[in-house]
Amino acid sequence: MFLGISFLGFSQTDTKLKGQIVKAGSTKGLSAAHILNLNTVVGTITDEKGMFELGTKANDTILVSYLGFQSIKLKITNDLLKGNELVIALLEKANEIKEVVIKSTKLIGVLEVDVKQVPKDRFTRIRINGLPQTYEIGKSSANSLTSPLASLFKPVDFLYNLFGKKPKQLKKLQKLKKEDNLRAMLSGKFDREVMMEYLQMDKQELSKLLTDCNYSDYFIKKASDLQMIEAVLDCYENYKAIKKGKIERNILPNRNKN
Image (cartoon, rainbow, N blue to C red; front, side, top):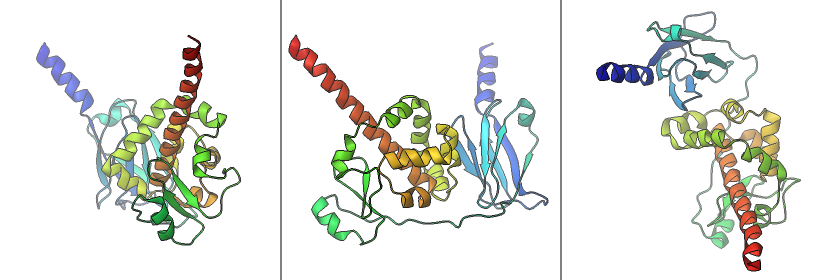
């Protein structure tokens, strides 16, 4: 009986979805297509023939994407897990924005020295030693404050309401950031699909979020999906710090009264 239960548990957690990603209307496999299990936050890419294997189970949802092609979401059923290889055909997009690479500046952590080393362009971001979020040098956004430190203590109700309702989704974004293979996948993506799926937001709402977090329009439009995820998580850490500070300020007066 125990052996039967153990075998059943193993088969449920170790099921492999096997298949091939091809270009619609042909049998040509798409190499390096991205497949992500949205439930478990586990992903893979196709080989040179478009073949893949991905751990999954019934009722999971996978996201399949490839640069220049329309992405699709697929709900996994028991029929798809019976061992037959699945063929997924992707349609080519009519217009595709070219990939943009944003290079970072190597800093040593001393603000007075780092500011002098920053290239003289409008879109460079710097990191202040001891603070989690990066800040842009040059043209500021309409919602930015006079200094990075001041922006940390800006009471943004929109962010409070947003992050307070999405702790599970943010944990999945954190997992995406930590896994090396997922980081590599997201560093070459610019479609925001993963973030929109996990945060249940459209592109306009994501833009509003990053604007309130003091990121420029240029960064929001040109950053990779990995850079966008890191920016949202940095903003979340600032939100938690602000919220913690508010709670402590509310508790201290009560303690003084006692």
